[in-house]
Amino acid sequence: MFWGITPALDLQEELLNHGDTSAYELNFLVVGGCDGRHLLKTLAQAYRHERRYMNLFVIDGCPELAARQVLLLSLAMEKTTRCGLLEKTRRFMEVYGNLLLRQSTSRYLTAKSRQLINMITNSEYMNLLLPCISVEQMKYREKDYMENLMNFWMTGNTNQFNATDLWDQRLRQSLGVRYDSRVGVYDWDYHMRLKEVASQICFHEYKHFREHGVAFTWLETEVSRPNTTLGAGVYKCGERFLHRGYLGDLVTSPYISFGLTCDDGDMLKSSHGGNYKRATDVTERNVMRLLYELENRDKLDSSALNLNTEQNLGMVVLTNIDAKISEAPNSSEAPMLLREDRDTYIDVDYGKVHFLSLSALEQYPHKPQFQGLFHGIFVGHNMLPRVKPSVWSMARDDAMVIMESRKYMAELKRDDVKSYGEQILQAAAAAQGVMLGSFDPTTDDCARFLIKRKSASVDPVT
Figure 1 (spheres, rainbow, N blue to C red):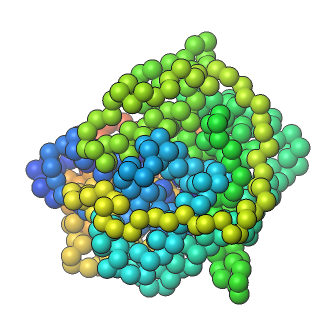
Figure 2: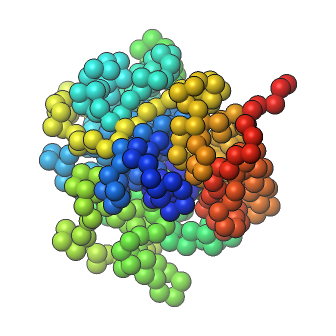
Figure 3: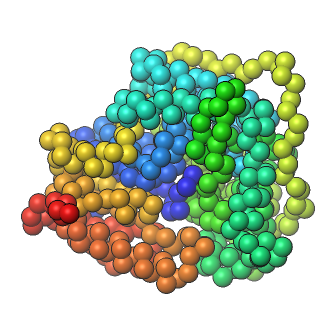
C-alpha cells in the first residue's frame, strides 16, 4: 500500500522511447503510483532530455497515499544547505520504508508535518514555498482529512501509534498457526519467489524487514520512534487519535522501487551467489543520485563525493537486534524549526505535480478540457480494476500507457501473477492499445502499449 511493487520509471524517457517526441509540453497521468517514485525520477532526470514543461497528474486510492507523496516530494525538494546529501538521502529512505525512525528523523517529521499543514490549508503559502506541487483539485473533505492526518504525524513522541505491536498483530493475523515458525515462512518466500526476480535483495535484510518492519538499516544508527506516516484510517477523538493501525505491505518490501538496479556497476557485484552490496546500499545510491540530480541538474559523480564503498555488508550476516519503541523523550525538548522562505526549496520551473481527487477517474473523462490531454498514463496494479474504458478518452492518440505487473509480489503464486497479466491484456484491448513487444507477467515489470483508436471509448450502460 505505501510503496510501489515495480522499479521507478522516468516517464518522459518512456514516452520518448516509444511515443510522441514533438510536443513541447507533456502531460502525464499516474494512477495508483502509491509512493511518488515515478514523479521523483521523472523530475530528477528531466535535465537529460530536451527541455519540456511537464504536468504530472496523480490519482491514488486514499488520502494517506497522497499525503505521503506530498511529504516525500517536499523532503526531496529541500536544498542540502541545512543537512548533507547523505543525511537527506537516509532521511528520505527512513520515512519511505521504515516502520521505526531515528530520533532526529522523528523530530524532523514533526516539524515537516507542521509546515505541510500550513501548506495544505493555505494555497498562497504552498505556492510561495512549493509552487511545483498543487492540491487545489482535491476535494475539501480530502484536504481536511490530510490536515487531520498530518496532525497525527506529529504524535510520534506520544506512543499513540505503537508501531511494533501493530506490526506483530498483522504478522499474527496473516500467518495464523504458522506464526511460531515464521522464520521458515520468510525463508520460503525469499528463496522460492523473491530471489529469482529480485536477487539484489539479501536474505538477512529481507528477514529483518519481515520481522520488524524496518527495511533500511545502517551500522551507526538506531531506530526507536514510530513512523506515524504509515498509519491509516486516522480520526481525531478528543485529545487523542483513533486509527486502524498499519495496513501496508508485509511481504514484498520497499526495496523494489530503488534497490534492484544501479548505474554504478560496482554496486551490483556478487560472488558465489552472494551480493557485495545490500538492496539497502543500492537504494541509498539510487536515491542519492536522484536527489542530487533534482537539485543540481547534473549527473552524480559518486567517486567525487568520497562515499564509503568498502563496506560489503551484503556478505555479512549481522546480529539481529529487536526493534522496539523507546520511552517518549522529555517533552521539554525544543522542537525542530524549519526555514519557511522560498530559498528552502529547489526551484523546479520545468514541471508541476497536481494531486487529484479519487473521483477524478469517474468525473474527469467527461470534462472537455481533459479530453485527449495525456501523452502518457501509468496504471498501478491496485487501481486497474477502477479504470473504466471512459478513462482512456483522456489519452491522446498514440499516447503511451504503462501498466505494472505483479511480478515482485512474493505472496502470490505464479498462476495468480499470470492471471493478473491476462487482466492487463484485457484492459489494453478495452483501451484500443497496441502492445509494444511481447509481455510476460512473470518476467516483465510492466506492459507498454500505444493508444490506436478506431472508435470512441465509452463505459457500458448498466
